[in-house]
Length: 454
Image (cartoon, rainbow, N blue to C red):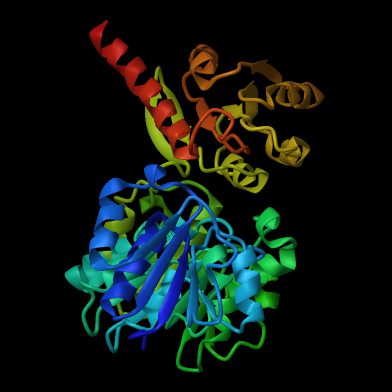
């Protein structure tokens, strides 16, 4: 399909690197362009691509690089569709793809592709689904997509009849064409990435795109309690199945603290370690996928009673003096922090704040009934202080998490929860939000070591 085709890859990163290796091996003439200089790239990757015959253009986006001689533009998902190269490709009628679309056309026959998307919970749902299917089918199951493994990187190990569990991002979905999963799942829709897409409708369009290409032989699993999901996917060709955390339905639901799948009791909620209604929704979605493969309740229960969660997403991180600490650094927006706060009934000390982006903290107000204190950090900490005062909640502010953490320990009493759920990006002080979460967990470990040595 790609042999002798001239292809421009826009953006290096992981997806561009893997796409370049894949396409050059398919016999394409590949040019990879990235605005970062060669010194900013990974030296080993650059050398490998050069040895394979990939032409590399670093440091800028030359205006004359893209012309009608190209068959495809393969874009890194993080680059918006208003990039000059994308606009020029559309003018020249050159298809704009991404790494996932490339890999999709090269998958072996009879591979079962599972695509999981949504605004919140997709990483947790993807991970749980993978763990259940891996327990049931061992080496036949592969994990990929937005969760960290480009689909192209799996091509060398996936065999006919294997199962791929993929997390699919909205940025990936924006440039899908033929790509579609045999089983697709949506956790929920809420406003996000508006700076990338321009408006909420365009964001939902990108999320929904993979379902529009499904056939009547495919399956779509949807959260019936999310109206935006249900309305956006009305009329798709695939067979639609639902899960609900609120009502008994013809699908997966909760009754008397037990999860049911079409009236079959699967497992009691008491066996599940994860907290929160949102996690029960994630789990029900994963169960529905597993049941498409006739996975037993015993296997499902075995995985779920040991699953502690995805790192940095409402992750239990330790107990100090009877106070439980949770790392939810991935809560970089208000919606995620609302979900986190809804997960606890214990008295909670909330660590809030980070990069100043004009966050409307007032939207957290209905979720603060169990919050006994707020500790503000980051460049928006003064607004956190104002917010705390308006809510008549004891509030303290510090520039850094390092300065704030001892105050959290001081405030915590046995039975309390300390929750890092900042509702803010981390770029004011960290390269990525995971670094903030790791720092938080390191402080917990340090305190525990001190206690051990006393």
